[in-house]
Image (cartoon, rainbow, N blue to C red; front, top):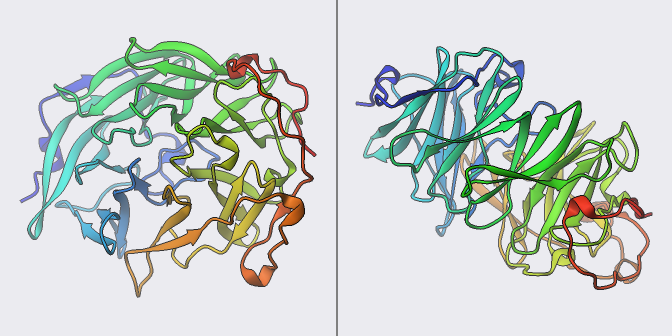
Length: 407
């Protein structure tokens, strides 16, 4: 018998932050991402072994764990003793258990779910109380180690980072940061350096929070004094960063790229600015140590006729647009080191599937023929640029603003 939700562990901590009053959180179960950003229909561990999502049975929602590292993917339903409510989030852990966050009457209860024969086992971890209705709390992306999980509580004037799984005594307060923070990108493989987008004085800039030094904050991304700069994706192996900023065109946010620690400016290529399309990066190719321009990035593309997949590398200077598999859990996927993008999908005929897509090979744009639409790819090209000179690395906030847009 699954414990009822009112019987979570006695560990309850109070935070003056955390609410589900924001309509963006009530749009569907699993909500909690920043308003205006595309949200993934499932969450995958950093290592790619497990995924978790909220699946539907009629009008009800229940957690489901996917195993991705075996010969064939398979799903295990993890229903509780009642359907999940709007605002619920799930996240897979490296050991196969699934963390669930349930908003319950002004607090957020956390538990670990796991299969037990025909039923679902549940290990309550405690709860974070959120008395301030003007605040919201949501899970951060899976930590690189897969053994811990973190949440971000965003209040009116401050933001708090919580360790909600993997600690010693239930949810643990880690750090309080002045300003309203959003996003959440891990910069290393240890789960120590967390990048957040902080809004202060009407401007948003990316900062780094050192979780091993009491939440020490340092600036990361400040392209211009009057620009809004957000970090969307970071690849720890190559140092490649995907950034959204209105620095090159005030009032219009554009997608660009840079390299962590590089002296070169952030670039905003035309291939990442196709008309009438919204691009959101969701996965980068691992194992590309010190090769940021060869690192493949997967992007969710939203347009007037639906949602599909994009593949882009800085060295290609083009965006390859690929048809997504039917039933794609949009915005989710994982790369293999050898350049295969694995996209999870669910259809009535195949409720748990993974479609492999091979990334187009990196080659000079001038010597590579453009795929035709019938071949399933439509590239957005830009002319070649000279190879950058080797330079001493400096933090991104010190990189010059010149040459921002590569024509």
